[in-house]
Image (cartoon, rainbow, N blue to C red; front, side, top):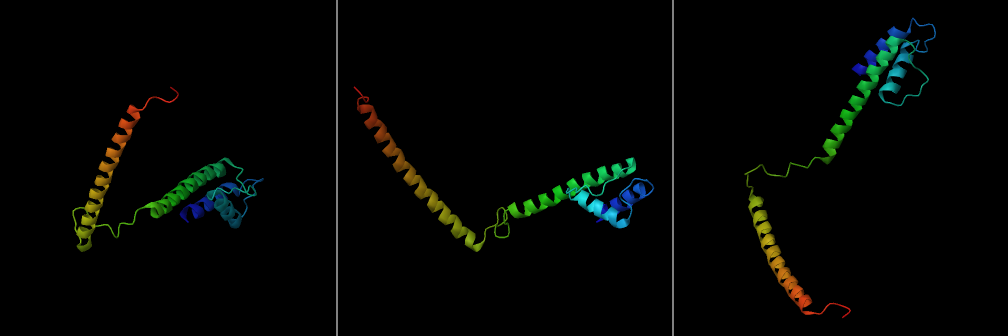
Length: 136
């Protein structure tokens, strides 16, 4: 709101004395600032003086920065992991120890399966070495 109000005031002050200015009233200035800060830029209102264009540069820069920051906050909120259910480092809850035991058992089972797969792979490799190459 500060950027919109300040930009409208400044551009109106810069443009009001120019004979060919198309930003003549406060509503024209507010419309121009809002359209500019949102990067829509209809082009129906625009500054014609050097000072008005400098205000435009400031408004455009602030608009891109503000909307980029807003988009960053929204993305951070949407993509951040939910930490409400995660215990702090070193903290063990009543259910955490049973979950840890389940994870350890799952890892043991995975290691057993990996060992069995390794044995099968070695047998297949031995079998392939014993066969003559195809086409002979």
